[in-house]
Length: 449
Image 1 (tube, rainbow, N blue to C red):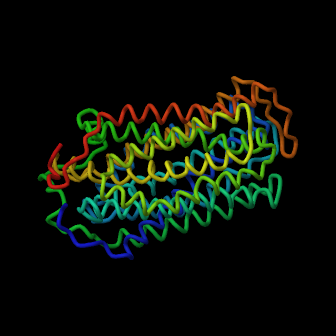
Image 2: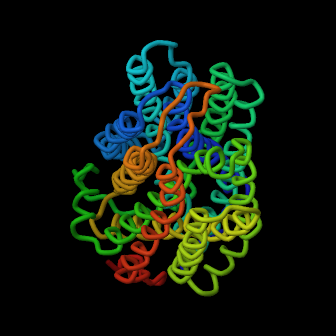
Image 3: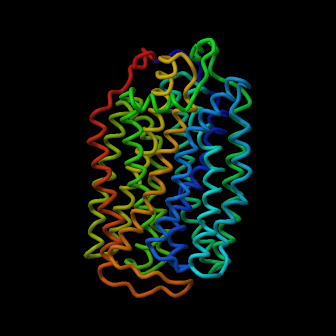
C-alpha cells in the first residue's frame, strides 16, 4: 500500500454528496423519461428510443473534450471547479424544461424533449467528468481510494432510493402533466444542490502531496488524445471501461423496464416504488461489507462475485414471463446486493488505473481518461432505455396518453419481462467473460502498466 495520510471525513463526505446529483440524474430520467414519452405524450416506442439515445450520443462527442479542458484547467489553476459549477447550476432549470413538453402533436413534444434533454445532459457532463477524476487527485493511497468511492456509492445508493421511489411518488401524488413538472422541479433542485456542495468542498484544496503527483514534462499538455491512446494501448483501462459499460448497460435496461413491469405485468403502477426499495435498501446495508470484502480479498474478486450474484438474480426474474408474485421482490433484493458491488468496485479500480497511466506518460491525464469513461457510461445509460424501447416496438407495445393505459398484446407483456430480466442477465454474463482479461495492478508499484 502507498504510504499516505488518511483522508479526513469532511473531504470523504463532501465528495460523496456529489452522488446525490449523479444518482438523481442517473436514475430518474432512465426510470421515467421513456415512460413519459410513450405513456404521457403518446410518442411511438421506436421514436422514443431515438429521443432518449441522441442526447447521450452528443455527450460521447464532447465528454473527452470536457475532460481535456478540465486537465488544462487543473494544470493552470490547480482546480477543476469552474466547469463543475457551471454544470451544477445549469442542470436544474434544464431538467425542468425536459418534463414540461407542450401539449401538441406527438412529434412536437418529442422534439421539445430531445432538445431540452440534450442540453441537460451537457450540463451534467460538465460536472460529472471532472468529478470522476477527483479520487486520483484526492489521495494516492490504494485503500483510501476504495474508502472514498465506497462512501460515494453508499450515498449513490441512497440517492437512487430517494429519487427512484420519491420521484414517481411525487408524480403520482400530483398526477398528470403537472405531476411530472413538480417532480422535475423538486428533483432538479436537489440534484444541483448536491453537485454544488461537492464542487465547493472538494476543489478548494489539494490533498495529494506534491511528490505524489505525476511529473509533468516541460511543454506537455493534457489532451483528449490521451484517452484514445489509453483505450488502444492500456490493457487494464480497455477492460475496465468495457466491463463497466456492459454492466451499466444491463442496469439501464432493467431500470427502463421497471415502470413497465409494475404497470403492465404486476398490474399496479405504484409497485415501482416497492421495486426500488427492494433494489436499493439491501444495497445500502451491504455497502460496508463490499468495502471490507474488497480490502481482504481484492477489488477484482469482489467485482466478479457481485456480477455473478446480479446475473443469477436476473435469470430468476425471467420467470415473470409465466408467473408474478411477492417472490419478485426477493429476487430484486438479491440483484440489488450485486448491483451495489458492480457500482463500487469498478469506480474504486479506476483511480488506480488512471494514476498508473498518468505516471507512465509523465503528465496528468485523469480528466481526459475520465472523460472517455463518462462518455462510455453515458452511451450505456442511453442505449439501455433505447434497447428496452426497441424490444417493446418489436413485440407490439401500444403507446398511450396520460391516464389511458392501452391494453397490451401478450407478445408485448412477454417483451417487457424479457427486456427487464433476460437481456440484463446476458449482458452481465458477457462482462464476466471480459473481466477474465483484467489483471489487478500491484499497489506497491504505481508505475506498473
